[in-house]
Image (tube, rainbow, N blue to C red):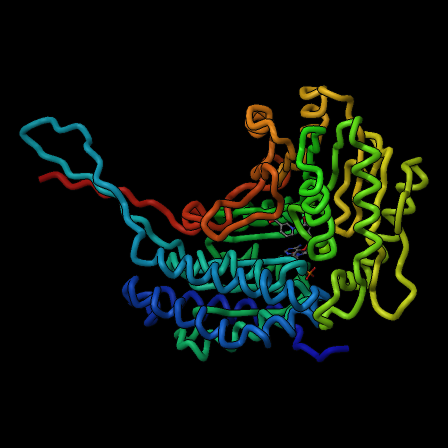
Length: 454
Ligand code: NAP
Ligand code: MG
């Protein structure tokens, strides 16, 4: 037990939405000019930076992320996200549009880009602060007020964040953080008649449910960042050293609790055995341990149920006949540690080839030398479409593949290289609507067309 946190009730959602609505419609926030809103968000980012060690420590303890990664990625990227969107506040503008100019009347048509109202946000536990930041920053920059529910298992950095918004001077009612159960609090937020937009990150089944609630309640605008099973294609003409190092990161980053994790590696047959051996050599060197220890590479899984899921997932892989090359078990020490795991000889119809593990499990399959279209077809044979990657030194091949992969992100000779300025989001059942970059703002704005005859 780290600490105890109040569990919100449905009436807390209703209170939060009511104050958020008031802050949006009649409060200081709604009247604030965009440049001042930007300054406030910059101030918040500065405060987060002043508290970055504290935030990273809380994140490490709460989520099991190793401290060094929590500081650089979980917290570091969150700060960058607020700074990036703070800069957008006074650059949200419409356009002037020529319409039919039949004389004697003259017309002027222009568009206004407006915030929608109270925005609900529901997020998962894998990057607790960063998922909050990706959505909340765009949302505040656009001028909304926010009612956010963190995951039950990781509410702590969200609560610390709430404290910092008060310190930064955000008016009352603008940011509301409500820790509680998804089936109760998340459900109420997605059904609330005064919430006009919902930003969700989480699993595909819950995403579908939320989309339904948003439709039935009041046709809320919704964006969904859902699950993934991202393919990573490794060709025999790649820089092998880099493909090994980055292939490891593609799978084991944040102990595999990474939505864009490479859920499946396809390795060209002539380098398959070499690649596998090198990966296993590296996996054996990974230091498993206390996330607060600065030399740890691999921390514990997020929570007990997730650890249990990993154990079961690997047992299924073995039952299906995949070759378990390394790992596959809970580490015999206190805590929710799971061994970094490597499977090969994985067939396309196996459960572990199709379903997301969301854990530190590398799934390798072979493809015949030179069979570009064959491996592309296999890589696209999934209902997910979040990310993908390819390692080859052949630029033409890489670009050909990047055109054909059905995924919202394609990494070429790199992996996990997300940036606050680059739009991020899935295709197919990995959802729709982007986080990050200019496109994320569109998710939190509506366009009003104004026409004047003079
Ligand atoms: P999840 O089970 O879908 O939960 C996500 C959030 O939804 C949690 O806060 C959860 O509350 C809440 N929730 C559950 N039922 C709800 C309902 N009926 N109505 C409203 N909210 C509800 O996902 P997870 O297990 O936390 O996270 C893992 C999944 O997230 C993976 O599939 C991963 O790929 C995906 N993910 C996607 C991205 C992306 O950008 N595409 C990023 C990160 C993670 P509780 O706290 O009660 O569980
Ligand atoms: Mg869940």
